[in-house]
Length: 84
Image 1 (cartoon, rainbow, N blue to C red):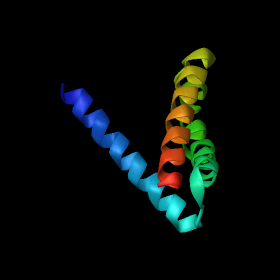
Image 2: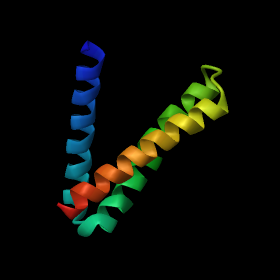
Image 3: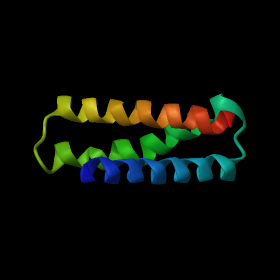
Image 4: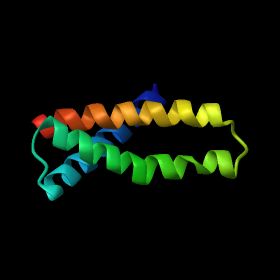
């Protein structure tokens, strides 16, 4: 239960920051939100989580699975926030 609540709070923080980035860049519409979300994912999530493969010895397949999960998460958030 506690993990679910903390995960939900972390997702809210991510959505807030992504919304702030979308506002700062002046992106308009769902496509603008998706574009900003993709670049935020690529610059921050994909690169930081690559360390689990490089330094922790985790498998590339696990990295790809997690990275794709976060990509979908960011793109959906970006589309919703951009359209909003």
